[in-house]
Length: 407
Image (cartoon, rainbow, N blue to C red; front, side, top):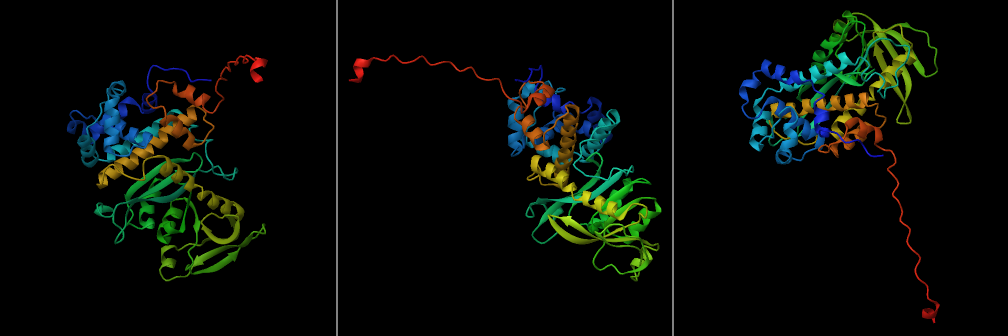
């Protein structure tokens, strides 16, 4: 079956999921509306979203394509195509905090109007009995060019930006993100990320974020944390807890004995040593947590769910334009990363409202191929993957057979 025709292009139907008032409101907050003359903040946002949706190769690719479709672009709330220098200058000069605020405001708009958004669209296998909010913290490194991006250098010949993410495990949606140079240690940035957590929530992170002083602060705030123990952790067993599963080697209440760590974390916490299957191999791991109520096997399952955050980063980096950048300045890179996160949330929202059953990558490629076509977006997604109408086969007439010519 063929998708239903529509009055407007698919690009307009995708991008206008952003509420009309948001961009103007945030641009006014940062004074960007006064800086722009012909290239409005809304046109800037549309251009960057288009760059991600089409995986544009360069500034010229974005600008030339939008110029060729200027008429269709103007129907998108009067958006105008940028010049090459105009888009480059906007990415460099306009405060990237606008893109950051727009991402959070759009995500908040979707979540407030659709409370179940993302609730049943998660790859995580979480224990069903846990009713608390479960958060995952991790980071992904985005490689940059060291010879032209001095602000991002973290080694002699390497430059990179890092995106630290606080992800809601129940919805598979980002709650908070920090985009900056890869030079600061994860534990330092983790403090800022954890400021968004509330009492009673659970947070899971890798041992790169372990700072016992920070962990003690989380415990004091009533936040439950789960992570892995570092190999050099010095401790003494206060009490051994009952073991109810063969895979659990040790479940104990411990206290730190190191000269510095014992001062940073004054209370006792829980240590679980267990045999865990990873990559079809049995690996012995040490987990630490301040939760004494959940079963030891449940703690192990919670940490195993953290590994699935790589699916989020894979979706982000393999589908959107994060392998190369349209600008070299820190502000331009942040604009592009925040617009990638915004594009991701919009596509996830479309997948939710259309009840999309395919993968995120298939959704992205389906929309990318017909951005300028006038199809109904939800009709297109409904019929995507279904069998096309069978072509009528015209019967060929039988050839005339003359026996005499065969002699």
